[in-house]
Image 1 (tube, rainbow, N blue to C red):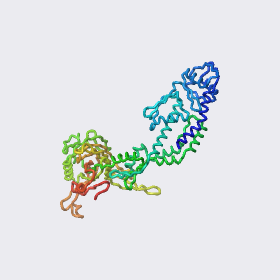
Image 2: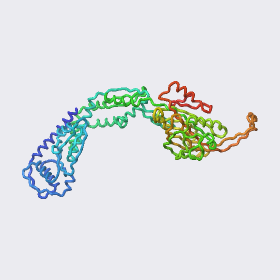
Image 3: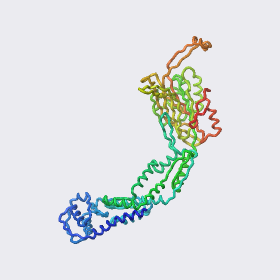
Image 4: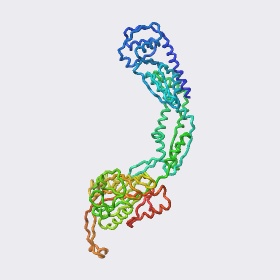
Length: 572
């Protein structure tokens, strides 16, 4: 069908070729006495019965033409004058273009699949080729170099684009497309949506990543663009003709082309989709490309290390900080716990309380034995002074996959309108986001933690009878050894505690015991600490590891079992 389209274009240009022969060999007589360039070439165009387009650079020249021609070929007159005055001229089949020599354009055009010979053949077939301006190509025939007047350079570029489209389409049409499914064992093929606190986050699957690598944009946008290009008439170019001639040319090309062929070419568009039912990637492409997809997918479908992230959320009365064995750097107090090998990378100030990120006053690293010592001290002083472990959640996640631990209390405030009542949720508590990333060698692994902590507490203040929630945020990065803990602090808030004094035995008697008890309310300042412990548990959990996790669920303080999350599910 493409050959028929080219033949149609060539036939339509026949009249142009005949016109070229007539004006070139037509003879004219002309006497110019100090005539301007514009006037001279306009008169010459009238004698040749062709359009003459003179560039602005030529019009701006102050040269005048003084010459006498008697019964001489017009093409010889053109060559004489342009050569004498340093001008260029080019005939595109309809118009003669005259340029100054300084307007010569040098260009390089890259071609598809050794298209240099095809380019020259098309230029000659269309009648655009002019041997006065040399077109050179490299040894592979995929790059051409030329220096030509602007109009000729424009046509060479347009024809080269047409050659590239034709060769690319022929290449695609000649190849056989086929389907192949790639079931994934470890990675997720499709995109997943995670909704948290009313916000939706899309976690991209392998299919989306593969589409972006292959197409560089959304696949549906690419296919739609290809359809729009196909709906336009293939191969239609202006080639310097009038609008009416262009419309005639387009009409004949469309009638000769088989539109079904272009519709069938849409079936040759590669596609990459995800099948949720089987967690597979379905590819429609050539066998050669399918082999490349298989290698790419194999690199991404690999088991990744599982990492357990356990967190202890602790409220400590400020006066008890030294007693539990925690002293931040730079506060003038000896270290009872000491430092491990954490390296702080990036930290952001909290909006509340005393935080000194610049000199590591809010982060430190504890080894396993030091953690046990600290938790034991908390148990000993856990009486009526406010120091206690609020929660000990844990979660199993994969390397470089975000884990979210939410310790939030929610209550609802009723907002009354004119016709309806709305319940607005008010949330306070702690939200911990951790992204673990394995570093170092397998024998001595290190874990980089990207930590984001949001902590909010309600206070006595209200606005329009709605409680005010004071919130603060800490963002930090640190590198710890496997099994060591990162201790993060910096959240300070005031609280009220009830101190109870009573007569032994009598103070516990029901009803009358209140006569032998005295309760005193006092205000204290509490500091909230987050003890984050990452632990590598392997690429998959075997039965012994599951038993080990179950054994570790008991709280160190022998209290209630902590919440343990595994792959997003809470284990009882």
